[in-house]
Image (cartoon, rainbow over all chains, first blue to last red; front, side):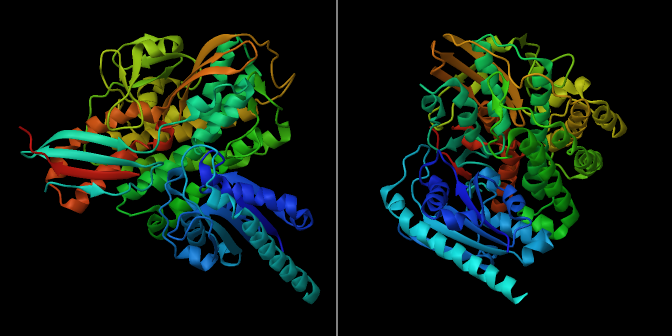
Length: 165
Length: 430
């Protein structure tokens, strides 16, 4: 199974750097797992997200999200949830993760079989700058372990598929 | 009707509000309230080493990073009296072609076309015109691939530097772009006809168009600043002729000419001032489709973008066919204290940078004037012109019409401040 871990965000927009930082931290903390998958980082990919995903069988996205939940809360969202999600993204000319996945699903047959998991970390400070809210940054270790769990599940599934084929 | 309110304008970058005050059926006040926090990049760049500037300023915009990189690099090269060779320049133009292809494609098909076709979003457009959207996504990918091959990645590419490039792309990789670019050129030519067939609202404005002009190439990175009202001057004189000022309701600075006029930058300005410098196929498209210039309807900036798409696909093909890298990827230079300015045509219009450097190459001062900031007061004036029609419409229609006008400018509010709430209120004035 071809697996991509994708950290999204903006490095100069406060909490929006969280996705990038969490994936980077995960690579350092779990180098053996990270070596078994493809890892990419992208700031504001917009529709380019589809190009990252094309050819992969599973994609785990880590990104900051807006939510009524308290900052630092981790939210796991899967493809079907994203397909029904209405985002209020104001970035990259309106193309956030949910809208891009919805457009891709309507355009490309390969989207039907791809597994998409998003780990969102609830953020509150999207102002320009490098300061990350303490409630968000303190949740990074949990986010890293959540990411490790999801990637290991996918790797186990991949091994099982290989053994059965 | 006294009030139109749009909490958040979709399909633009950034956050802003629009207020229209009405009295006796006439608009008396139009404001674009930009409430995104002020840009911090100009301050953030101070004390940074000059070679960090292109990669930092690229983060001002995810959709036009090349424009920020090129304008900043040219300003810094101007400060240090660096002269690049023709090979480095040609690769910069190819890089820019990639950006124009992906940016214009995004705006034409996925941001503005839904408005013209009565669709709430590109997702809805994809349901009724899937081939149009599929072609758009493929064309956007073509532009992204150009950026990836030259710049290492399509979002915030990393290969451009003061003096040239960190490395020259291999010839095979550059040439591999040709088949898809040739496909894109064919589609772009067909799509001009499609663009001409769209139902554009009627609105004609007597604009002052401002763009870079060069006699030998479509204005992008070399040349002088031309105005359709007659003014011609070098980039070094930009700040003398075009003034930025604070306005109370906006975190973005507003621009005007030194005579106090609001002007327009972007594809309409470029096409109207530089159509003689278009590539041959793009010129043919103008002639064969009987397109009359100047175009003065802001909604028809989509047509200008579609013609520019033909031009930049054609220019990219020509540059790739002649690509023959030789020598070093960048020219050497010595650090010294200095000051310089640079300007290039971002897809949205003129983008101006000025920097002061100390003797160690550290930035001591930065000024960045993005195209959307220059267009903001012009957008307000256009909305003023549109307001009488808005007053006669039902609430929802008026809201969509106002949004549509703003979207036709392809504004990048994040760039300007470093989505739109539309409110039209009755105003009691003494």
